[in-house]
Length: 314
Image (cartoon, rainbow, N blue to C red; front, side, top):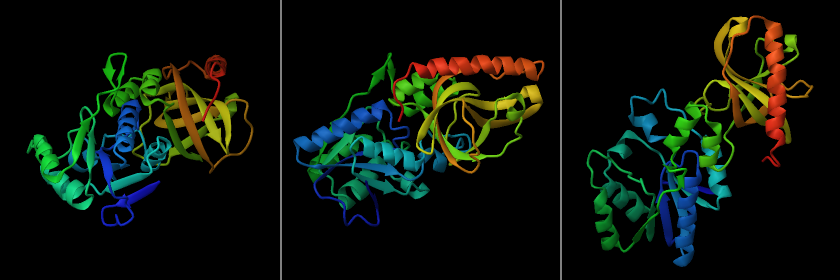
């Protein structure tokens, strides 16, 4: 994939058609837009290009910036875009100054004057530009004046829901992994480095590895216990993930830890990828370690059963 900065677009192909957005999650709604973009590019002998941002606008503008979590890191987002056949991305450094621009002036300054677009694809809720100015309708004036066409793509609907990044975040916050994965079109995942924790798990026969996320903005699902698939050094394993506290042992600092079923080895410091398949229960406080061990045995069997039904992993 070619990632072009605005100050270095010399290698950007000519005769381009673009779509613009954050593309957080690169979910099935985005996939529909990308397919639509590529189809229109092929019909008109153009090159499809995605215009996106290096920072989520809410991180720059909103009061909820501290609470916002993202579905993808930048590396993950670009990898999925490439998987869906996008070879050229223009990355905009989203700043307060950029945010002040209305739709009309952002389109004129960047899409028309700088990128010289020949076509623009809009998603069903694609309303870029300063919403306080509310001149989105004027992009059609620009299209007529500067001879580019505009196409609009309908939403992707799953079980009556217009698929969006917000809907997927809501599903993850509710622990509804199945819904989130169905809207994403892939199993939600998180990557990180294995670090040492309190090492309580090994004392009860269920050694766990604490995971430090690669990016602190990466979203984790609702606290609870999850059936997972884990990839480590190119090999896939069945795993159990615990997101949250360890109340049985009076530990109330939230952690993200995994138990790799039937795995033996020292993996501290290594990178790991965890796919969330199903949430199997809430965090519970047990009367003693023996009661917890019995529950973990049940959790293990359930995870093996859940993952055993699946045929393939990434």
